[in-house]
Length: 233
Image 1 (cartoon, rainbow, N blue to C red):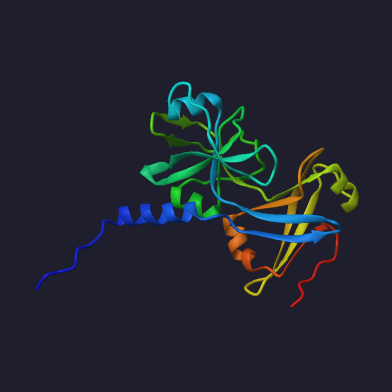
Image 2: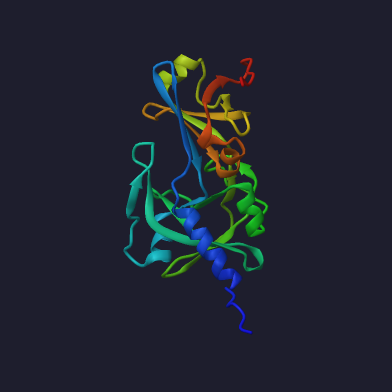
């Protein structure tokens, strides 16, 4: 009696990851006093320096925009890299975001860091001192980061006009209430990142967005940290 052929486990995992990475991130919107609040799931991604772009993708190479992100001037690039952790654990096809930065950085969700075997701390973007590193593999080269792997702390982008409306300023903390049929939650300690031009947008990682059932949310509301907040059902 013949037996059915079996698929290599690593091949199956690679195919599944590729499909997941190609799917669009979740997003919810809600009017906030005349300005639309966007709550986005920020999937794992990599920021690179110009030097590391050339090392990974070849001399003279630059990032190629694939699609714009919600914030003006930022984009998902065509390029992806493999992120390799201890004991050869890896995440293939991790998207590179542009534009380039002064220091390369890898942003993961908690489950991603577990999968890689990296104890990634919760940090705000750019606060990389003392963080663990990893290896990045591209089609033309390899980069070994001595630091730069983080779990991105939840935060909200806004412009100074939004700050006035909410009564907050750059560096303050806020909270987000998400009401969904699956699991209503309140996320606290969202760092306010304010400048002259940013659009009103909260960034959560994939674990946080999935836990709240963000894609099915009925209501999302941004509030000051000391505001009374109770879920409505």
